[in-house]
Image (cartoon, rainbow, N blue to C red; front, side):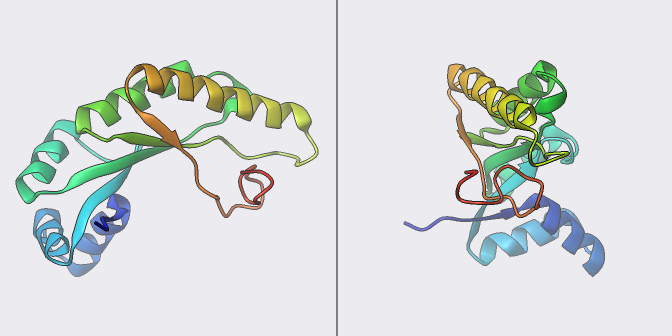
Length: 149
């Protein structure tokens, strides 16, 4: 069975542009065959309210993504928040965007991003979540190429 998901941020923006209530747009999107949404850890609104609205409409949260700057520290609080919010919304996975190089030749930044991502994976697995990444299309992303991924 194919399941379709879309970014919640795009849906919220579409509702604003159309001048319609977000909930009405979400009901409409559900009729188009969209089953789930993907949320930004840092830009999603009231978690409890959203969770209830998604449940009423029949939408799931397929994943919650979050940006990190692992090269500037471990960011344990961000990781804990990411995991807690995903669990609260019933998301089975989180997506890590590990940061961006200030200089692509800086190997220490790359190692820090890799280590931060490993730590996030360990923490998420302890909470029953999977971690995924995407081939992020920013030239300073370590994931912009297949080699980086």
